Image 1 (cartoon, rainbow, N blue to C red):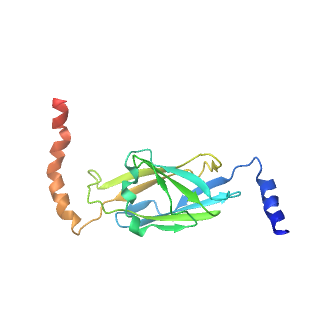
Image 2: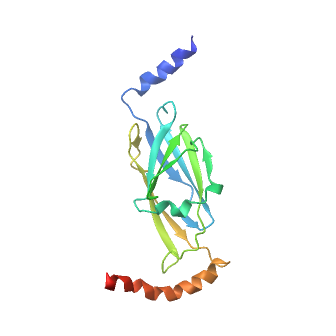
Image 3: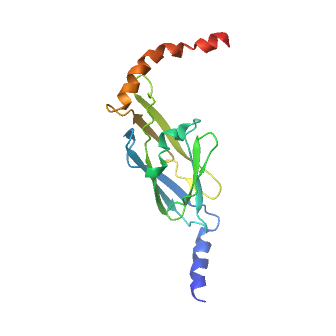
Length: 173
């Protein structure tokens, strides 16, 4: 029965204090086909069953750049993630004080705007049962289109598409 007391000691230290979660990424400038690793460091006790943390892009479809599930690598994170219905955010269950997820950047073949790049702001949101380190709660990722290869053929056609941005449909609507 001595093993049970170890658990109690940990619970005493955790009373009233929520775990502090800090996030970091290994790279903020990405090209389609690259991957980014998001690392979570939890200062405090992880509850039984894990600690659910919420990452938000603030934009519907913001996670579409990271939809290549075949290349996702989970380290001390549950494989059962909960993605928002509008693909703007994701809830991850951290199973250990040091956890990480590696996400490949999808080669979507979609032009990311006139300069061929887009920015995605990913925010670690305060939630039930944890507090976020305000110094590491947000990161801006810059994603650049893949240059060359098959994707460039589609890119040439998109130049003509700039005229359609004038919104012919909006005149009628």
